[in-house]
Amino acid sequence: MKKIISIIIIALLYVWACTPDNPSMDFGSIPDDGRIKVFDVADDNSFMFVNGLQGAVLPPKWDLGNGQTAVGDTVYAGYAFTGTYTVTMTYYNGTKEVSVSKSIKITQDNMALVSDPVYNMLTGGIDALNGKTWVLDSLRTGHIRLWRRQTGQESDDKKAPLFYAGTGMYDDEIRFKLLGAECTYENHGQSYSHGGTIDGVAQYRIEQLRQMGSVTGVTASPKGDFIVNYTPGMQPQKWSLTKRELNGKMYYYLKLTGGAYMFFYRGNSPSDIEYRIDSIADNYLRVVHAETYPASRATAKWEDHYLLVPKGYPILPEVPTQPDPPKEETIKENFESASKSLAFTLSDMESNPWGLPSYSTVRNVSMTEPNPSDSIARVVRGSGYNERLTLSRNYTFNLSSKNKLKMQVYLPKTNNYDGVNLKPTVSVSLVDSKNSALTVVKTQTILSSNYGKWVDVVFDFSDSSAITSFNTWVIQFGGQYTKGTSASPGIFYFDNIELVN
Image 1 (tube, rainbow, N blue to C red):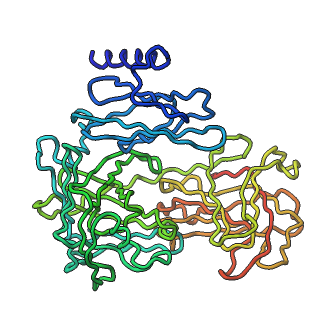
Image 2: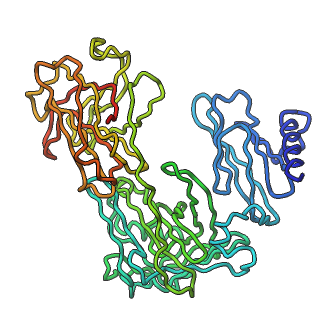
Image 3: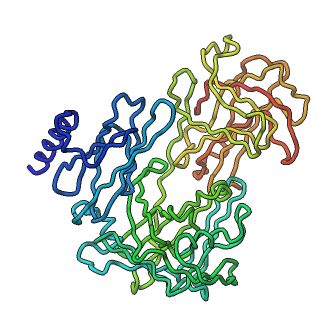
């Protein structure tokens, strides 16, 4: 009944929001360049935010101040803890994006908004008045894992038990309290930080720590990084949880502010210390930090994994995660529909000043048999290294029934196949993204008599159909060549790609 009443209240308030005779419902003043109307929809710290700007070109984007974002003219948010939250609406005024903000002040906690089990496992719940303290699971291999996922330069460094002994890391603790969303990072005076020069800035991470708190001393570590005399800038610090999708799965993201971080500082920026929760139980926590800044760390796709247990809890084996079983792979695309079933990504390991390579859908250049289709795919090669189309999946392949990839290709006569490093070839690779050494390549060479014609080609992977760790397809036109050399540009077309028996 309470839920039904709340829905009725929300509906009534939405009507009031559209009625200019109720200005008293609007919180705060309205800036000249935009409006945010705020309505208290219940007595549980929940609000409705309405875009009061008339004639907006696109629905506005919202930063709700509690770690959540939304898009639309009417959005909702709840605030579990006391404090002042800044709600920002960003809209397009026809020329540029403009932002306007309002403050929402919460004077009383509402724990009903954080009844999610993840909140309780992280903090100990509402009955844990002093919160819950976590430490590194230091006696386990992989308690810290530094994983570089850049294609061709992968590395997976799982640290041995007590690898960082003597660096001041293993007596660090981090405590989370549900009440007030408080977080306390206790380092007993010393912290550990990634060192060295990044993008030309010496001791890059140390400079970030100076922005987060007080740094009174830096000592080189025998492990290659730095021991830092560090005090967080805010006491206590704060935490928040949000839930987002990644590769088709939903994850909780834990954001720390005020100078807290997880044991080994490899942060993106002082205002963006965020960890993805990959696994959590009452006595186990595994978090992942994706290094998305600066540019070189994002390009390298660094991920930092940390395994934690509650303080005082005995060391236990890691809770294994069961991989999803291989899925029967299906590929079928004729490029006729505006909605494509295959999301190819075009990669180029070196920048090209002419804006090449490129990948697009175009009208058929030769609507003759065997391919009278209207639309086809086009790949324009530049002179860069490793230009190729990648189709990455979030599952591994079961190729036991379908393992032959067929397509139609068209190689124009105008390409200079006798030029520098440009061949009349089409290659398809099956790749295990977690083990790039496991790659199977099949190549077809088009005869000169078939230049300027549609040709059927088949790539037979039946000899690799028993392997169940492949999760990526790679298509390359014109051949691969030695890095550091140049190549002649070229145009290639393909269509009607399908995985068959």
